[in-house]
Image 1 (tube, rainbow, N blue to C red):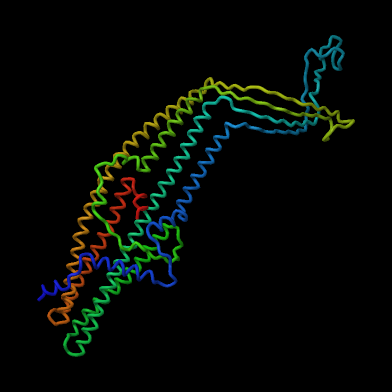
Image 2 (cartoon, one colour):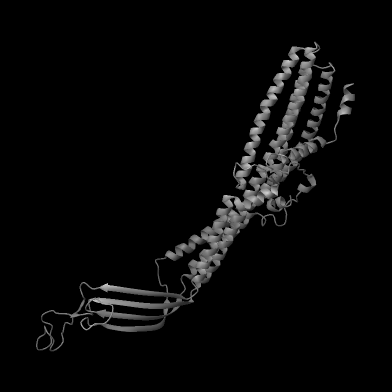
Length: 473
């Protein structure tokens, strides 16, 4: 008879899981005030505009672009205007040892026997000079310009890395919330079933058919389930808060998840031993390559510092002097003014700097070799991560199949035990044990399901395919 019950109650394979997901989606979609519904893709899109880490990374990227403009500006003409005004509290003197014949303080031969000097200029002096310079030859400029472009590229890659990490955290939090949500639904379903059995048993107790110990045992079981439901509700709130934090959404903002039914096919996750562009797809590998380019440019910049540089200039100036303070000529201030103008070339040839530049060149070489070793180490790490992630995913896939079967069997046993209890064939202890076994099977399945989601994320990230994978969802 028990076998007959098992066959009669056997559900379609995985049907109860799909139904649970649909019920979950429908129930949450009908919540008060119609909170927004978000898929994983929607959460990532929202984070791209609101996540603070991404905003900071984009600021760094924009700063790098402006630094490139700054370096480029060195190659353009430079124009400056300089002005001075000074009050010579002590006017400098020009002393001529031989003196000037017939001048005061000198003897008949013109010797400066009294040690008097000739004042150089007046008390008040002002000048205004404008100059334009243009770089003609400076190898360090072109090296610096190329380095600035690579630096801008580096910050763009950093933004991509932050974007990938943010997407990974959001997907992980999203899956966590889905799993907790499913766990809550299962516990609520078990609680409803236990309460129904309890009500029936209480009615049987009044009619003298059931025992009080059966009622008490079922009440304790229902109380435990109620406590687990409250804990699951709290876990769901925390999981949703973590998701909203990663999105950059206010914690108080209600949210509904739409991707509550997720399926994974094993053949979709099979990778080759090593994709052709395995390393190039990884953003951390790309960042190391860019850093190596920057280090080589730094060494080149130190080397070209030995080369001469040539700059053209043109200036025009106005100068004035007066004995009294004034802004223009008067009869008493002895105002003198004149203009100057010049064009020319400035040549700079480094000769010897105490071997400082040579030390910087050697440092750059060593840092480049250090980066090359880091790149090799990163390639090894990537290969290891891909191998481990793929192995973990395949192992979890095999586990999820087993856990699904266990849940189905435990559910069938629970349904049959309840039916037998109503017919008086089994005891309340059998019902509680069957419910406990079902709950354990469901918990194991939920845990394995979360492991499966995470293993898939880890595998896609290890292969450098995380963003395209999430975009395809």
